[in-house]
Amino acid sequence: MLFNHLFARKHGGTLILRIEDTDQERSTKESERMVISDLDRLGFKPDESPDAGGPFPPYRQSERLKIYGKYAKELLDKNQAYYCFCSEATLTEKRELAMKLGRPPVYDGTCAKISPADAKARFAKGEKAGIRFRAYSKEYVLHDKVKGDVRFPPDVVGDFFITRTPRANESETAEGVGMPVYNFCCVVDDHLMGITHVIRGEDHLSNNSRQLQIYDAFGWELPEFAHVAVVLGNDRQKLSKRNGDSSVFEYLNNGYLPEALLNFLALLGWNPGSEVKPSSGHPELFTMDEMISYFSMEGLQKAPAIFDVQKLNWMNGQYIRSLPLADIAERARPFFEAIPEWKTALGKNSKDWYVGVVETIRGECTILKDLPERARFFIESRPEIEDAAKAVLVDPANAAVFTTLAAEVSALPEVLTAELVDQLQKSVGAKSGAKGKGLFMPIRAATTGRTHGPELKKVFPLLGKKALVARMRAIEERMREHQAAVKA
Image 1 (cartoon, one colour):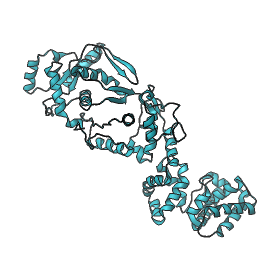
Image 2 (cartoon, helix red, strand yellow):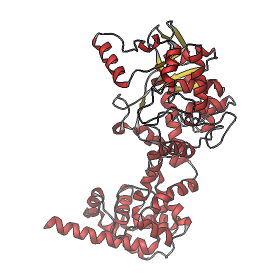
Image 3 (cartoon, helix red, strand yellow):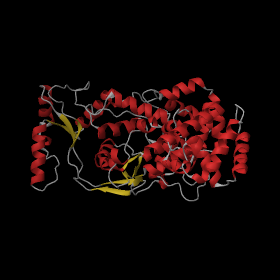
Image 4 (tube, rainbow, N blue to C red):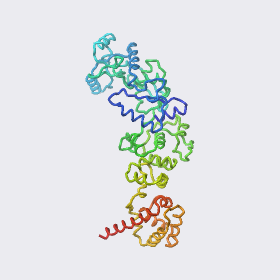
């Protein structure tokens, strides 16, 4: 969908969302709802769709059965298709026997020998039947924009179903034929909807061995096809839950930004070229407008792409840091509000305070879901102390810094500013004789329980003097508990 979107927008074309749901066992209203919801959250606005409408309705294949029935009957009338009365059990036996004999498991043409008159009579009496296309015995060549010329030898597929045989508890569709199959529906729809370009995964490439024949039978013009390479996991195996294959819904709900996801996914199968210079200054960070401007089919790649979750995390972190602060704070707020302690804190403090909290820690996070945890020290009553900070806090060489810091903090006014924090650190350094890492590391450990983090001149004003003093006392108390436990 993404590459189709980029191509359509670049060339002023029409982007169509069609719900291909004739496989009733695999298609559900819930899956359709999820697809439409995911596309909406990613910012896709199809020009034609079940919701938006358009000049070629309906846009659900399950609602177009009369149309498919009309064209299936046209093929029957031309003797380019025929009724197949073979049961599923019979077809399974035929496939197994062919494979046992080392032959391709294609249909042997049993029902092709039945005269059209006899077949219609049997069908009229209520015998269940699907409709098979009489495959042409000639080579087809697909001129693919990515793969080049792809050849399909004669007799590679045999006669194939264009409508399925209804099961015992099923009836024919409104047009008196079975449920149409994917390859038939797509060709009919692409022709009727005026589709000019189809960009899809290479796993669909084999479908062209059937689709080209259907185009040929009707004398319809082919759209241009581009089959892009599959995406593999880091282990170079098919994507699975283990190596990155999660739904868009899951990624967005875990705090990945739509902009980052789209940027990352675009580069999985498309190379914009080394001469392209995006406004970000980084060769892999593009706005949607830039991707549309630079996109071309020539940049679509033949080799499989690797879904690297670490790269996605890096890219998402870049977007968290570069997008407007107010925007990131607004998007992150639901993740904070989902945690009771944070929901309480947000109710007690101003919006500016919350935005300030996000500003201090967004540089440390790769997904929005990380932000509440990284900012936890702003609201925790008993701060967690990292092992590295414990080593700093028990080091006798830092005693003068701690003593001086406690005295200087007690003399601060209630409302703290960045300037006051700068003065505080300079004063502690001058009075204790400490400087550089020997000054800043003990101050950070004594006030946050950590040895790394955002600038203290941003942290202290958000805490305020009262909370800062309380934190320092809590850290002292926890360190006494820790030392007592070590001695015991």
